Length: 300
Image (cartoon, rainbow, N blue to C red; front, side, top):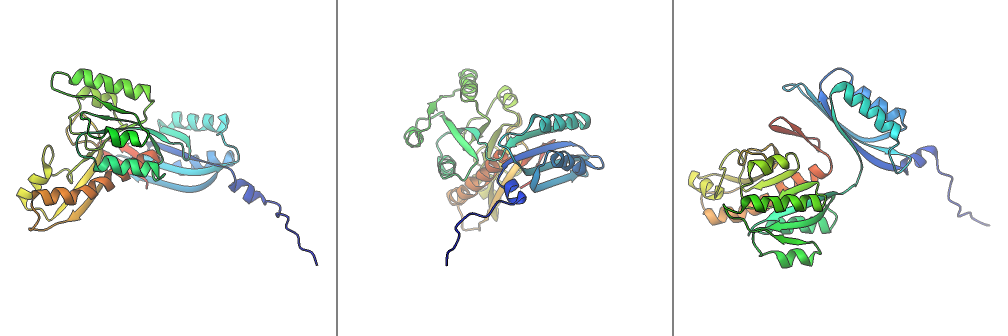
């Protein structure tokens, strides 16, 4: 008696599943039939949708859409991009089409607190983030050895009131040199100028060690202690020219009680800072965050 070890012929459905995944993001003013129009374009080009999320904001009358879909080839055909561009022009939309898994190039900024830095370095190294950390900038030398151990370039750029314009110019040079997609302020304790905030609009995320909009500015945990809070938290938000006022992406909270002093609150808040920032960076890199005026829509 003999047995065959031949592999069964692939079915058409299996062959389609073997293709490459892409991510389409699309936002525009709300109108009837938008999901039908977008999915119709994908179907016409044999796009097999594997995940689709959308949201209609009744307040702003704006539509948000994210789809993951599979194509037979490794490159999206020009005809697909042309059809999406034509639809976007008709609808006044903002859109992007990228291969799923295409890593975003990140520049981290840090001062003297290293927990968020270390958390992001670990997550990137273990593949938890769809990102490549290409450089780290600090106004202090403390984490040079840690960063360089990971094989990542470290740049110290001291900042004073008088040297801030030159320091920010050097930062923008690094952003251009390393083709940075996203700047992450991982407990970088310097206020960015309005000009720099404008340059990095929509591509800079900050972690604030407080549950915004409460306790803005310096020493928020000490402010929280003075108010006798029963929870502490952290907020990851896009940077804008208003201190700690950028659109919020992610937040985390942790319960505390009357026995927590200011330093206890600081220690309790560290985990919330790491988690909120990691979530915000992950969602941004996966194309799940949309700006919606002073707010965000997160299709996670």
